[in-house]
Amino acid sequence: MERKTKIHAEDGKQEITITRAFDLPLELLFKAYEEAEIVEQWMGTKVLKLENKRHGGYQFETSDSKGNVVLKANGVIHEFIPNQKITRTFEMENTPFAVQLEFLQFEKLTEDTSQLIMHVVYKSVELRDQILKLPFAQGINMAHNRLQDIVNKLK
Image (cartoon, rainbow, N blue to C red; front, side, top):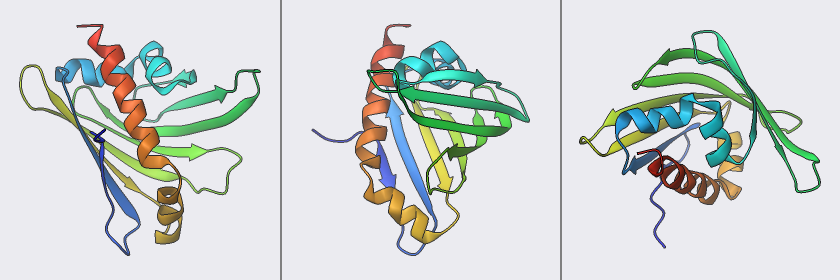
């Protein structure tokens, strides 16, 4: 099965670009990043905080089936322009990975389709390469597939 979420990583650079077209109107795609209840569904995580504003913050927590916390992530929202863009940091707690900077851009393609372009900057080329060795591409594609399915039901 083809991965609809595309990841572009140039050798020797500490950044990646993630692109995905969705069969969703722009407003619904953006809502999937804006509303905590929807974020929880497609990311499969608990949203502890989601302050969608300049200098706002967010916290996510993922637990296993026994209730043990397996991942905590947080960040600061630096820019939040509805239906256009979100600029934020992303940090996974208790991991060797440094904070990353994410630029999310939302674009209308047609009345019923839209696109997300994520530009992610890592502290170093080595860190970026470490992340890419994880099942990162598969995971983000699966999450975006869930986003498409869940938000489709809101149409």
